[in-house]
Amino acid sequence: MIRQIVAFVENKKGIVRQAATVLREEGVRVCGLSTVDSPEFGIVRMIVDEPDKALSGLVKAGFVVKECEVIAVQMGASDDMEPLLRVIEEGNVNINYFYSSFGDDGQTPVLILNAADMEETEALLVGHGFMCLSSRM
Image 1 (spheres, one colour):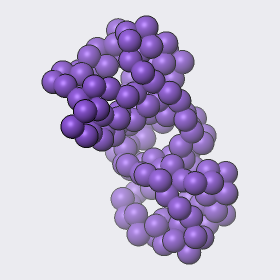
Image 2 (cartoon, rainbow, N blue to C red):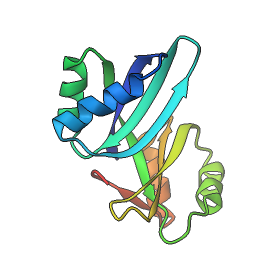
Image 3 (cartoon, rainbow, N blue to C red):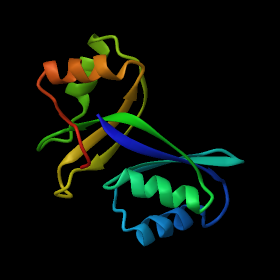
Image 4 (tube, rainbow, N blue to C red):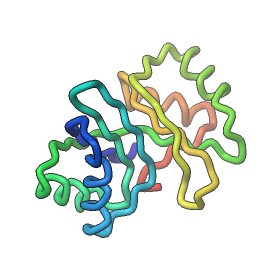
């Protein structure tokens, strides 16, 4: 599993850029990003190369943030999610959310997911031959 930073932000123009500016000033590289919004607020989920620096910088800048673990599954040369989703379905795993990203090489697809039982889900995937990353991408 890897660490994910989650920022709860006001849904207003420029707020994601402000967070990106903080991360750049802290020397943090964003490796994966997902945003979800509603009329009042947004959720920005990030995989970064230095989670501690990201947390510290964002909190210092006034953002409400938390950290959680997610599973990062390297998809290999193929970006076909169907085999992975079949294993998850057959394993009766409840996925809370997922989004795609890329590995360090900028080309290898990586699926970031959060499930009801993270350890069981990771063990299921590894048992079926999927490579789960254990550190920053």
